[in-house]
Every structure is written in C-alpha cells, then in structure tokens.
Length: 266
Length: 370
Image (tube, rainbow over the protein chains, first blue to last red):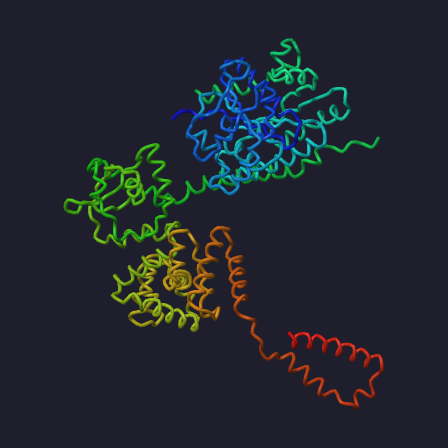
C-alpha cells in the first residue's frame, strides 16, 4: 500500500490572519525543496486565486466538482506561476451552498478524505486552505488532514478564535473518530509587527500557552506591505521580491514538512 | 491606558480540554495493556486451535459454496455493517486467518469464520482458505460456551441459545422453561435462599449438585438450575435479563438483531404496548417503532429511553386520580373544627385560616373546572 500523503490543513477561526498567505508561501518554499504540492481552496471567498494570479474558475472546474456525488476522479487542477509542480484546485463561492448540502449527506464530514483516498493526488504535499469560520468544510479538512497548521495574529480577535479552535478540534476529532487525531503541527504567529506593543507583549506570552497546549510554536512571520504588493500581482513574495527578508520567515515550517514527507516515504 | 488582558486567560478552556484528552489517551492505553495482559480469552484460544490444525492437516482451499453455516451458531445476528467491514478489509489485505471447518461427506460445516464466509460471498470470492477440524461430540454446547460469555452476542441470541441448550439437556419444552425458572426463583427469594443459589455459580460441579439438592427444588427445577450453573450463568440474572427478551414484540427483536438495540433499552420500550397505551395494536406498534428508531439514532441512555416512553404514554393516558389519604384527613379535621373552638380563637389566627381556605378553594375550582 502506498504511504499516506502529507495533507496539511490550515485553520484559524478568524478572517484576515494570514491563512492564504501561509498556504501560498509554504507551497512555494516546499517546491523549492523539490516537493510537488497541491493547494486546495476550500474557502468560498477563493482568495487563493488572487494570490496565485489565477482567473476565477467556472464551477465545473473548481473544487465544487470534487465534492459532487458523481466525481469521477478527474481533479480540476491548474498550475500556479507556470510551475508544473505547484497545482491549484480552485475555490468557488458555491462552496457555501455545498456546505449546507454536506450537513445532510451521508459521510458528509468525510467527503474530502474519501476523495483523497479513492482518487489520490500525485503530489507529495497537499495544502488545504480553509474558510475562516469553523463548520462542516473545516470538518472535512480535519478528517482529510494528517496535520494542521494554525496561523495566529497577536490580537485578541485572532487569539480568541484560536483558543476556541483548539478546544473545538479536540472534540471534533473525537466525534469524527479520527484515528489518529490529526495533530496541530504548530502555531504560527502571523502579521507580526514589532512596532506594536500588543504584538510584542503577546508574542512573549505565547510560548507558555503553546507549551500548555503541547503544541509547537513556530517563529513569527512579519507583517509587510510587500506581501500585499506581491499578492496584488498574483505572486509569492519570494518571486516578487526574492531578496525580501520576510520570504525567509517560512523556512522552518517548510523544512519541518519536508522532514515529514521523507519520514512518510521511508 | 488600561493594562492589556493576558492571552493565557483566553486559553483556559483549551488547555483543560488538552489535558483531559491527554489523560483519556493515557487511560485508554492502560486499558489496552490490561486487556491484553488479562484474559487471553477467545481469540487466543481460537488462534491456538487454528495453529494446531494447520500443523496437523495443513491448509485447504475450499469452495465457498461447499460450506454450510453451523446451525448451532449462537451468533444468529450478523449485522450487514460488520460483514461489510470485514469484506473491506479482506478486499484490501486478503484473507488473513483461515476459517475452521468440519468435513461432513463432501461438504463442510463452518465452525469458526461466519463473518469471513459471509464477506467472501459478498465479494464474490469462489474459495476460502480453511483448516479442517474433527466433529466435536457436543457441537452445540461447545459453540454455546465459546460464545455465551462473549460480549458482542446480543441478549436475544443469548437467550435463545440458552433455551436451546436447556431443552436439549433437560428434555423440558422450551415454552415451559421461563415459567419453571421464575417460579423456583420466586420461591427461593421468599425463603431467603436466593443468595445461596447465586453463590453456586462459581462453585465446582459437585458443589453445584449438592448445593441445588439442598435447596429442596423439584426435579425439573433442579435440572434447569444445574444446566445454567454448569454454563457459569447466574439463574437470577438469566431470568431478569435474558428471559424477557424471548417475549419481546417482533419489531424489537428485529431492532436488537439488525440495529444493535441493547436489551435494557428494548425492555424499556416494551412498555409502549396496546395495553398500556389503551389503544389499538397497530397504533402501539407504530409508536414503538418510531421510539425505537429515535433511541437508536440519538443513542439515548436507558434513563432517557424511559423518559421518552413516559412521554409517549402520557400522550395516550391521562394520569389516574385516586382517593387521597391526605385529603380524607383534612376533611375530618375541618369537620371537627367546631364553632366553640373558633369563637375562642384569636382573630389573627382566624384571618390566617380564612386566607388559606380561600386560596385552596380557588385552587380546587381551577382543577375541577378543567
């Protein structure tokens, strides 16, 4: 039997805290380390399209098709930045409706996991960009994931969201009878602005919390207007401004995931 | 500027949940270790038998269609779900353990591997790997002993298997057995000897025989009690937990066999009957089936099931009214309250009495006018 793929769910339970930024830049870093990556956009807001410079997909060429009952295994994938090793399964606003339908569907929480099992993707790593609010789409992501990454902005809204998320995760993994429970691979402080007192203060408090949650804490990703400029151009920062120091903020995470891939392949 | 709140306070719940999950995982690991270190039990016994047979005769490839199910298989209930689970695993990983069969002419009787056999048929397999065993003399009894103490046997199958064994061993008719059993147990309870009987469950066969004889029971009662004790079953618990399964309505029996309804839940649900609801048989069955489905779907506890049953009952039957002793006492007391007594009572107390009487009067009016 082939080894299980690495499937990373990116969850935050708050909007605008850097989920898609993390997904895109992590994918790019992994690719630099000779990994093939699939990005799946589960968010009806389909921000991934913007970050990857892709025109919006028609519904039949989007992830909605994968959730369809008659999915034939033909994943709708397009490559990002003309790089054949990074492919995107594009999102669609219709996913909001799909979420409603999943609630009453048999194995509704496991559709994505079932699809990945029956029709496996060829990629080494699959990254799931999730909607900002917890719900059945996120449950699908959790059931399909081998590990989770949680970006956390050091402001109360995001912090509270993450606190609730962690608690919810434990319950939901039990409810879905996931064995093993997909672990949180790490908390990632995002949009970090060293000039803000609240950011500095909360960054200091975070290690203790992470330790009590038994979760790894990654180095922070700095806030930079260049991230915004890069995404406006549909590029990852590493490609848009190769020399920019923020591009290196994803290094540790990418290295860890490559280690996971290698372990999985041994 | 006010001090910023600490983020750790927001995480109290999450940290508690994490700790709890950790503890549960530890406990589960402990249970696993305990379980494997304790009773080596059934699976291991069968495994040994399999090894032994494999060494003696080697493995055979047997035509699935040449296998007959064991009529004495007490596990009458095999849910489609459990067969599908096995089928999936067999499809993925192949047949891991050979089934055990007993040769009978040119056909084979299935001794162990009911689910693998059913799954093979489901998968359309032509043959199964098998090892051959010799025909045991008391096939039913051995199968029964193997399975009776197996926890996934449901109480209905268990009850039927026990009745079957009792009829074979005692020659008493199946229909009479529950009556004989409950008669003798009631008598022993009245004469305070029930505990003596229970103590015999774990005793040696000789001690069981002399113990039962000392209880002064008649011949048929003795036979039944001895067979149960010999199977390491407590007669009182057979009577209380298993015998009632036999007289369950058909829909509840089906729910036990096919949907995994538990015995205690089934007993609670039997209260929904034409007799207690004072309605037609058809209507009562309809209510019972709906309630059964709810119990299974929502995984209700026994207590919650009883609550549900009570709610349904209340829909049909108004709570009964009866003579109340308290009211009789009050009526007498008020009658006794003579004018002489009242004349010599302080006005404050009389006012109080009037107030209470008026209040009660309006309450009574309210109830009577309903």
